[in-house]
Amino acid sequence: MKLSAARLQFQREVQQPDDQIDLARAALYLAGEEYPELEPEIYLEALAKMAAVVGDRLPAERYPLKVIQTLNQHLYEELDFRGNAQDYYDPRNSFLNQVIDRRLGIPITLALVYLEVAKRLDFPMVGIGMPGHFLIRPDFPDAGIYVDTFNRGEVLFDADCATLLSEIYQQPVTLQPQFLVPVTRQQFLTRMLVNLKLIYINRNDLQRTLAVVERLLILTPDNPLERRDRGLLHSHLNERPQAIADLEAYLDAYPEARDAAAVRQLLQELRQ
Image (tube, rainbow, N blue to C red; front, side, top):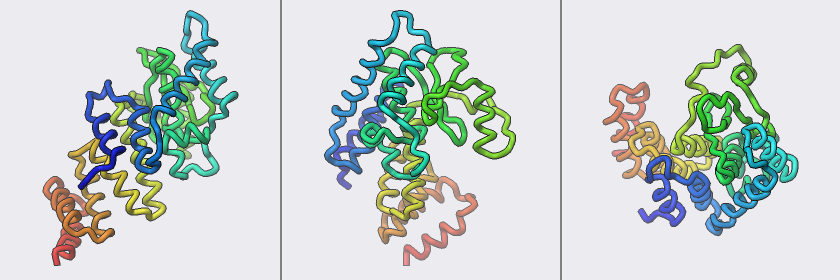
């Protein structure tokens, strides 16, 4: 199978050591499959311009709260970036080029914009993959503060994160330390793609779902669940040889899986 230029660029980017992956570039290469005319350099330059505006306003001593306050002023008050609560599951919310163009996104893509602008200010931040909501925080020990980029850069403390979790799940939730562990860059991209996968599944867009799963398998090639899902998609698309190969690989990895009997039955039908 011949891979698209955008797929090849994504593959090359994410196969580097994790700390060398350029998140913005990788995200733009993801978007490049949906928007073939996309020019990554235009959007990288847009991020650089945002950082330049913020940088000109910062004092020599860049205290974390001052940096965050100045970032919030430019991104949310002047550029009007905002969370797309009205149409949360619009696929455009998951593509960095569209988020920059429309100033609309979901927590993880708004976090990406924020992280990338902060990086260009030499103020590194990291993603926090809290259950149900994505946050960021400054990348230094005991930072103690988090930024909710979906809610106009609201600054949160541990107690606020616990309250937020309880609101999301509509019941009291105890904040566990693992909820606030920074994600790797590969994990960041994986979460972006999983969001997009669910959006396309709900729209019954099988071809686009398949394209997302194939990129998830670039990130996690040994993930049997994604291999299974790719096999199921191939089956629905009447691509039998590919479906059989993927579903057999899934059963080899998980012979006692809960759905093993159903997968074996499907394989039997595909072989007929």
